[in-house]
Length: 259
Image (tube, rainbow, N blue to C red; front, side, top):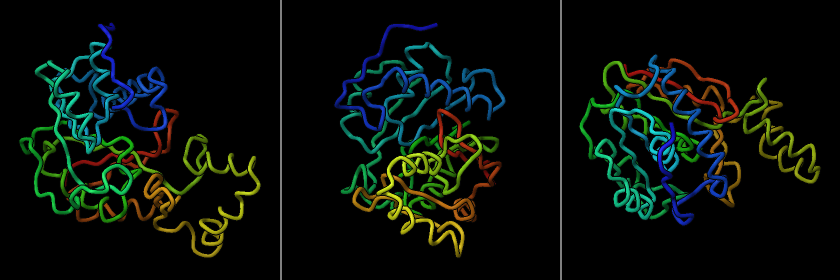
């Protein structure tokens, strides 16, 4: 059942669908369903969620659709958006915090992620920690740092779920590489660039471990080989449950449990 609208000014939206709020909310409702499925619950009424790189979509979707949730904490590097959410969300189940860490794309002046020792929330208090469209913009050293940072905040039976770009085609046709192949088919001038970044390496060695796909827009698309994405989890305090193929509303996504 929907409730009154919770409008987010355009200035506080980011991402490729910032002007398509309806689709953003629809996709986010699918992500909430996915989290419930991973937790084995019908809804989030008994679940506490930590949403890293939260943006505005999850809050808007939960509030407008009056979805049950025990507690929600959103963290993001976008200071003005966090200030807006802090000022305009009065529901006591919700909390928002600024995460002033470095990201080449979204917060280049922030402090290195590896230097952040703790978060402003209680350890061992979250049933699920989610990061949607975060690892898709992380370099390998921050991939590892983020996993280590988050580990103390999961409950012993909690889950971690995050989306990422994996350098492979898929049967679903929804992966980043699937989309790029379709684009290159229709834009022949881009094929040589593709060969320079991917194809020549693929022919001899398989997918490169990591590719910053467009260096002119650093970390807009952080692309990992399947092998390297899995390898980087080792030693971070997490155990991989699955690395899943993309769906219409999400890229590849990994689910982990605490070690």
